[in-house]
Length: 259
Ligand SMILES: Nc1ncnc2c1ncn2[C@@H]1O[C@H](COP(=O)(O)OP(=O)(O)O)[C@@H](O)[C@H]1O
Ligand SMILES: CC(=O)N[C@@H](CCC(=O)OP(=O)(O)O)C(=O)O
Image (cartoon, rainbow, N blue to C red; front, side, top):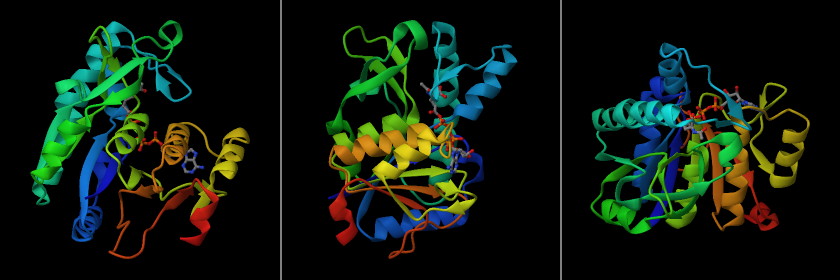
């Protein structure tokens, strides 16, 4: 069974176009089972501003106090997940929303409690739960909230990292990051494919910054774990027509040249 994990960023959730959904249909026609992980950073920031809380990020990760975590879950699970499930349903897909903390779906450990608070990195994914759903032709739509591996306390997970971890755990062939730009841009031009070493240089020299950093770093770790392809694409246009892809392909291994 060919599986593909699609991460939908909060930057694009309100702007997904019919062409985007047509590309999803093409993926299904090509035999892919779809699994979604969603973000929702902008929705969280909006809600936090109502409570007069200023967002604080370190290397693209939100510093998350116990109170912030409540808002993060309220927004991601109660609002953003619902929004994506609804859009998929309206476009003819059988989607089912899941909080990452349901059924031990995402299990995590603290990254650095002192500096980041309740933010985790995923150490285990309940891939059986995902398999059950996709075998029934359902599309899981996963909210990036995890449970702590020992205490069961909830932890906030960056959605890019969550998507890459899910992709590795379920043995997905590909992971696609859907965002509000066409892919990695260098001097405003789209880069069609880029190797790991070059990505590292782009981060160092500031060409890749902000929200693009967790995407490329999680892409590189997913490639190291055996995923065959990672792409960054726009949700504003078609990204797959049954044959060709549009966006940036991140290449992890030298043999990828011969594909
Ligand atoms: N080299 C780059 N090419 C394209 N976008 C970049 C680059 N470096 C940083 N970015 C920023 O990354 C953003 C996408 O990340 P983010 O806003 O976190 O989106 P999402 O919510 O989809 O995860 C782009 O809108 C852009 O501002
Ligand atoms: C730890 C951490 O940073 N979690 C993210 C989860 C949502 C997310 O990643 O949303 P985007 O994909 O839209 O950026 C946050 O709180 O914003």
